[in-house]
Every structure is written in C-alpha cells, then in structure tokens.
Length: 448
Image (cartoon, rainbow, N blue to C red; front, side, top):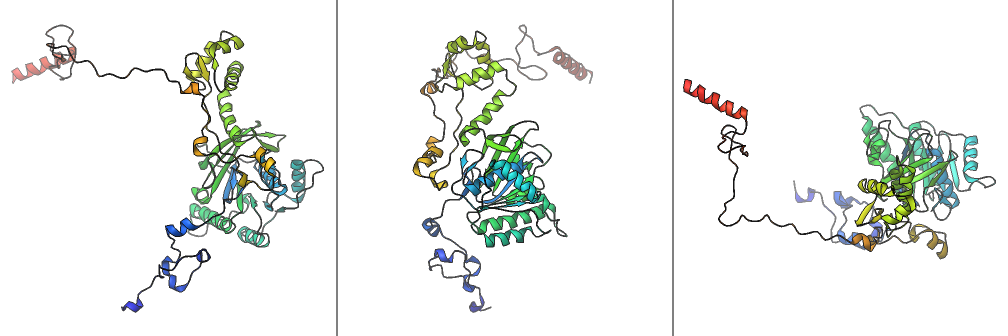
C-alpha cells in the first residue's frame, strides 16, 4: 500500500467556525466533528429554554404517575397556561403565550372542550395557540410529530398522552429494552432538533414500589435512560395532597408539594418552589403527630431566631417540655444552646430568573421571580445563635502510670490463652470449662 492510498484527516490548522458545526465534507474523515477547547471556549450558547421554569426544560421528558391519578388534568393545565401566558400550577409564570401541541389520544373533541373550559373557567376562551389531535394512525406517531413540527416549528411544548397508546411491539430479535430505548431515542432526536421544544410523554408508572422514583417508570430502563428529564406525579387515593419529583440533565433535582382540588385543579403548595419544597418536609413531620405537637412545631417555625422553652410552656402548658424533648430527639427541632429551640434550616431552591420569563415589565418580574442566587446564598439563612457551640474540653491522652509502678497486664488463660481477670490469686484458667479441658488433656497425655 502506498502513502497515497492511506486515509487522510483534515488539516487541523484550519479554524473551525460556527457555520461548520454540523458540516461534513469528504476530506474531513472520521474526525470531522472534532472540536477543541479553544473553539468551545469561544462559543456563546443561548440559555436552555424552560417552558415551566424549574420543572419542564427543553428536551425529551417523561411525565409519569399511576393511572387515573390526574396526570392529564395536570398537564392540561400546564398546556393552557403556556398557550395563554398564564401561571403553571397556579403560581409559576411561563412568560408570553406560546404555541403548544397536545396529542390527546385518550380523549375526543367533546371531552377536550369540557376539560379546557373546566380548567380555564366560565367564559374564558380557549387560547388560539392551543393545538391538539385525538387520533394518530397506528405506527405513525413519530412521522406525525415530525410533520406537525415542520408546519409549526415555533412550538415550545408538545405533549404525547399517552405513550402506551402508540408504543409499537418489539421488532424480531429486539429485546424490550432495545425497543424502549429505540422509541425514546427517536423522540429525543426530534426534541434535539428544536432547541426551544419540550417534548413531554405521559406514561404510567410501575405497580411495584421503589425508593428511587426513577424506577417507577413503567417498562425497562431503556425509556428512562433516553429521557433528559423525568417527572413523577404522585397522590394517594382520596387525598388532595400530592408530590412532584423531578430530576434531569438540565433541571435541578427537587421534590415539591402540590394539591389537587375539585378533582382537576393542580396547584403548587406554596408561592414558590422553595416554599413547596419546605412544605414537603412539613407534611412529613406532621404525619402521625398530635395536634399539640404540630402546633408547637408551627409556633417554633414562626421564629427563625428560635424560641425559649419558657415561652413555649407559657403558651402550651407545662406538658410542652415533654413535647419539645420528643421533637428534639426526632430531629424536628434543634437546640443550639440551653433553653433555645429552633426548626432546622432547609436549603433554599433556586427560583425563576428574570431571563427565564419574558413578556413582563420590570416591576412584574421583580414580584414574580428573583435572580438565581449565588452558591453561597443558596443555603437558608442561619441565625447567629445557631452558630453558638458550647465549649467542649479537648480530648486528652490517657495518663502515664506513676513512676515505679509498671503497667499491670492481665494473665492469659492456661487453656484458651485469652486474657482474663482472675477471681482469686493463683487462678490459671478463665473458666471452669477451660480448667476441665486442661485436666482431661493432662490425663490423656499421662496415659500415653
């Protein structure tokens, strides 16, 4: 083979421009997409678009939950909020009205109209930017989504409800994991083609319980592995209290308290994500506690600087000492110094930044969201009394034995060789069994 027949790689001295980001020419070879740190350092990328700041960023997302728990109502409210420029989950601003698409494959036109009117309220028109389809030909969901986005590339939120309606069977020789990852990969590829698009797939969870909510995704890990974001909506039957768990590549992991009223309206339990995160802990603390315990915890929590035990006793009676001690042992209260009780601080959740929400003037934006805090500001404020630590004497080395008095060592058992403390002077064995075993061994030896 001559040198002329060897494959060539493009000249690395040529600068890589932004226009050549995805280009391919015959002379580039296998390393045509190679980038350098210098090129990467010079790029200016737009911030990741978030349809619902803190919850639903651009990319491929899974929205999972048990059947008939209210997933479609929750996502329907978010779709209408995005299309009208309203508030998602009742409190989170989404900015200007956006074009949305809803593949409502479990609904018809009548039910869609009823649901929209129920969520919007009497007399409120359905937003013009709200688009939907209720039927898709079997096996055609991917090309249908591609056809829609080709006509409406400005769409920022596309919801598929549900994946089970259009999930194809595995191909011959293809495992369930490979099928799930293939379908998830196709949906992610579409989402990646549109930088501001959040493609959300509603999916049922597994029946089995798990400590990790990612394991709740129905099917194999292939679907969860292909998703950028996973959101779990959970609620006990006959209960209005629910939880939203979220994790992903471009969103902060969090757990937020939500409530459901009238079987349709989902609302964040708090005015911000930070408050909703704190309310999760409050719910856990109040579960199984008496009314008095909850009242005392609420009273102490209203005083970030802490309260004196005598003030709690004056308000709730002498039994308050017992309640305070129980909550202290349970970790629901801390006692930085004698007589002072506080609720342990909870780390703050970064809220919506001004750049994430558009379409509001400066005054409105300041009221609805604050800039993302610096890392040093993320932790909840700590009162100076919490920093007071009682003096602890330093640990000292054990004292040396007095001169002339050597260290005493315990004798070892004549049979098992373990160190022991003799019951009386001259005892050679640590127990009766060891003494008998030694005697038997001695007689056996004599008999030989």
